[in-house]
Length: 239
Image 1 (cartoon, rainbow, N blue to C red):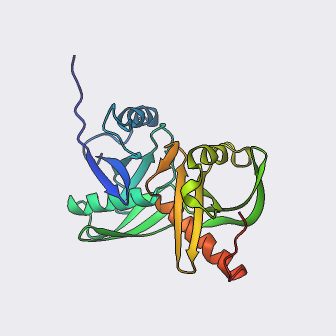
Image 2: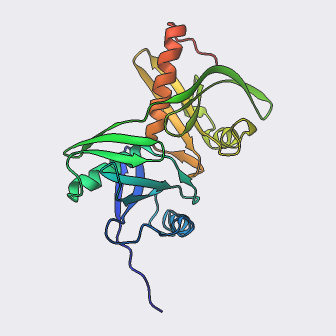
Image 3: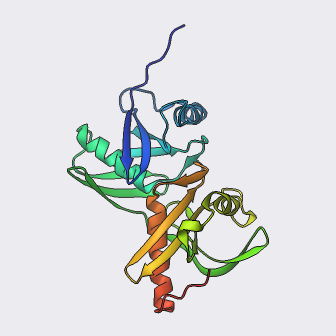
């Protein structure tokens, strides 16, 4: 039986790990999304395959320097990923596909990236759909919630004891909550340490579990914390 060879790279940003497949000049752009979705499911499985938080496709772009598509381990394609974009930018710079400064096309808009050594800065897409302090019924318990889209949707809840939050079960309940159907949302749990520091844990949709980091989640948490501190300088956030 003939087997197809696929060259790939693996990159990690703050604990988020990704498989990168460079399709520029190698694989036809017309490859069906259904086939890529199946490939993501197979390759992202931990212990049984390469294992990753997502599969990144690096394609050529008409207006930007490169184009990024991202598929979750469950096969769904999402608009963008902050840490994924950092990994893709590092790969593109090291492989001489782009200069150290580049524009990355995503479904959430173009991202500006700059690579300095092994450090990568991303200028995120403009956040939207901000909604602060609304009640959300999660399995009969009412939470004070906040929402923002930082390229992908994020529900942010402030907590007082982050270590003991059941991120897996509570995050999953929020991710599939009817309020955010049908696409669902990511769920971020944030503990405010002081006016300059927060801690965050994130349940990522598509990965369907807590991840070690989430770039768009950190941006979402930072924005919502800043807004909340403006309204409540003492930082006594309702849980």
